[in-house]
Image (cartoon, rainbow, N blue to C red; front, side):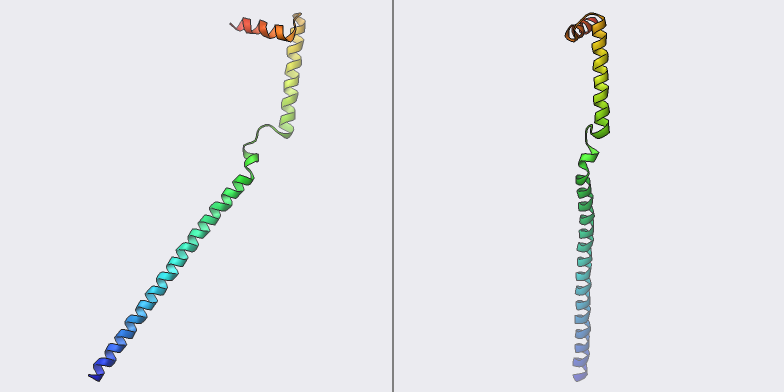
Length: 104
């Protein structure tokens, strides 16, 4: 009977040790999954932050050199329009009306 009790205690110790190992491995797995989620979330956050920092560069209108070139082009176009109106002996407003009537 004494021998049977010793064997039973040994089996109980091995079973308890196996459960402890399983619980520890499960805990480590859960920690690794959460850590992977944090890494993915951090990379998404960095991407979003980088995109927000450069939003004005990605979706801006005319600025700097491009804007000054646009203004000069508009000035040149206006001067040409004004010169053409003067050659016809009209003011700019009269010339605009004249052109709209020709288009119709």
